[in-house]
Image 1 (cartoon, rainbow over the protein chains, first blue to last red):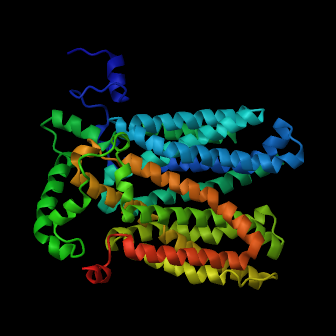
Image 2 (image 1 turned 90 degrees about the vertical axis):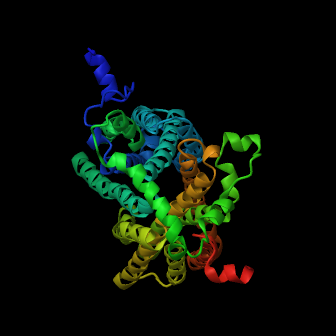
Image 3 (image 1 turned 45 degrees about the vertical axis):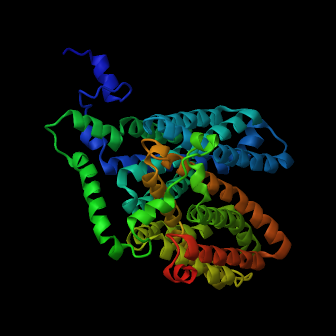
Length: 192
Length: 301
């Protein structure tokens, strides 16, 4: 059976599944450690971009949006709340959606798309409305990655090993703090 | 800055595209009878365990009774309202074990949010720390959480979520009360405050895993008792969605609560209130997490 390269690519990337042919690297791509590492990286990205943005919010509001200083604090609080609020509302929705779909991968990728949009908006946005939208998208992404990431972990390692997996995955999240310190330090030295 | 953010996103994206779930991989393996891998053996292995479990159940899990009783306890009635069919996790929420697991996560997030909000201001008030120096105060808190998180996670797998949750919350009570000790001053007071925060970090490491594991275990019992109701994969994503919601709510409430309480009754008394909340959580964890303990059960029957 002759197959075009395009069809093979689709199967490899799991966009269209053809169960008669094994995609490239099936064994390692479905390896427990690889799946858990993917979830850990996902949580890391979420926390990293969160941590990257929060300290520079006041600066962005003052310099780029041009808010007067006495309005900055309340707008920072508002932008923080936008993230938390979006995350609170979207978490159960993400869970419901993920249980309806046959695969976790699609909503997991969807969450990342929201984060990409959020990051671009945050670094280009020049009004409070755009920044608020970016923070809402970031909250949606967080809801997806935490909800689906944990469900993926449970399905992969089984409930009897969930404790140490969660402990280790949260480990990766904390690593973000370390990397961020280095990045901010670097930024500080480079900008001088 | 923007470049680093995009680079992290790119790595994440590649991994999320490449990853193949176990259940999807199993479908490929099923089509290819020549390949024998751990994927094929996993379901059989689980079934074997199930059979063994029925025989050895009384020794292994004396608290839970026989498997038949267990299933009956988690059986949901046939005629669920329409909303429960749309959102199948809803009937499980009546279970006190699950509610306690959510409470444990909520209090954990509230404590985290509280530390985030108060450590910088306390550092400023007591030692005139600016925001960069205040960041150093988070170090003892984070380091112990970082090192001990996996250790306590292993403990949860080994000894169950109840002892870890109860001991961690009970341990936090005196530590939170002691946070009123540091005064304005020099190095000795900074070391005292940092040391107490490190002790808090140990407690925070312990309360991370029990909630998620316990919630997963409870819902698994409902799923096993009602396989038709929850569909093919079970309601796990809904469960962790709710867990994430509760956690975010705690992270939002924590700083608010801290700000209000600290202003109204002072930092020391605020921590005393938190210690009281932790004591209550420890008690509820003792009663409900992982099923009722033996002595309470006997008293009832």
